[in-house]
Amino acid sequence: MNPDLAKLHPYPFEKLAKLKQGCNPPVDKPHIALSIGEPKHPTPSFITEAVIEHLHGLSTYPTTIGTIELRQSIAQWLDTRFNLQGHIDAATQVLPVNGTREALFSFAQAVVNQGVNQEVNQEVNQGVSQLDIDASINIKLADPLILDPLILMPNPFYQIYEGAAILAGAEPYLLNCTAENSFIPDFNSVSEDVWQRCQLLYICSPGNPTGAVIDQSTLTTLIELAHQYDFIIAADECYSEIYFDEAKPPVGLLQAAVAAGYSDLSHCVVFHSLSKRSNAPGLRSGFVAGDAKILKDFLRYRTYHGCAMPPATQAASLVAWQDEQHVALNRELYRDKFTAVLAILSPVMTVSLPQAGFYLWAETPISDEDFSRRLFDEQNVTVLPGSYLARDTNSGNPGENRIRMALVAPIEECVEAAYRIKQLVEAL
Image 1 (cartoon, rainbow, N blue to C red):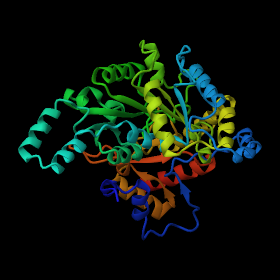
Image 2 (tube, rainbow, N blue to C red; image 1 turned 90 degrees about the vertical axis):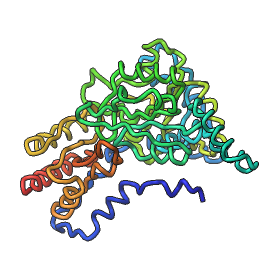
Image 3 (tube, one colour; image 1 turned 45 degrees about the vertical axis):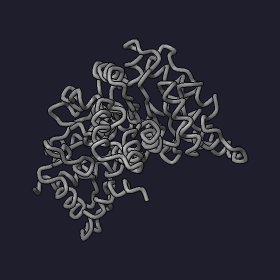
Image 4 (cartoon, helix red, strand yellow; image 1 turned 60 degrees about the horizontal axis):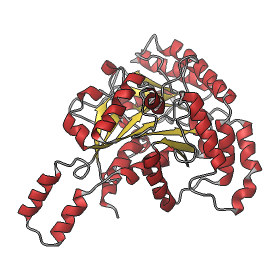
């Protein structure tokens, strides 16, 4: 087995299940789950019907690159949504993927250059002295793309980033997201040595779990750093279509690139999904778009990986990306839930409306683990301890004493859960 598998941390929901062991929640209070970010709004019927209508395509192998019609639909959506001024080519800069999860993971496997480890191992096998090996390593230290590759990522983070880094043979480098920095990674604190060793930077905007949006100026700075130090930015933007001000949609990485004059989108790759935007998590449909050179190599990897999108899924995805009415309705449903829940919780907890997304990132009056366990045990409501989404660092765990609440359930359940949370807070 791959020895790096042993380095993977337990997934947050494994830890949550263990935390809840031995609890006896009240049977007169139906369980309400706010722990998993799985959309519960109905999938639009026209998407479902498109799947059914195109099931006859099961007799044909789909291509990894997908149909040109789907890629054109995605390119048009990107161009319109992010004001790309025509600087997106459906033929070379768009790839359909089976949800952003698999793409975010496989992307690291495709782009990370482990280099020196393989070369040093070969030298050892050939009987080269340890002194010569040390000298070889010292020489290679000057080349950050060969020795000890780093993958930078926010902390807390979507756990796939860390797993992807570890199994790609890279070292995760965590950037804490705290209230003091508006939950945006403090990129200014990253040293030149770290940037030199960086091969891939994962960013998530709007963020999971904080809902923070990275502004255009910061994105531009990151793009300039990517060109200076020759690393790739992988922007997870799967929450970009859930926001609260219709006049101010979150800015995207490709949008910032074009605005800054990087019309070839070099060093920039974005990941989008229909799971949140269109309430279609079971469709497993998304796309990757950006730098044509990077996507050409990623397509080669994916061809061997064997992950082509089924024809019926492609057909449904095409029509989903062409419709905005259902997305606007989706945002309205979330706005109503946030308004109702915050009216109940704001007077008793430190919690506020995020910039985007469907999570509340609330402070807890006791440890996040104790609060989450008591909430389940006494109120039959499940939330996710914030520390499970982050890692310990020299300056602490940025998820400690916070919980993530996913307002994905129907509004009645979200309101009921809010009242139960309020009862627990007041009891404390």
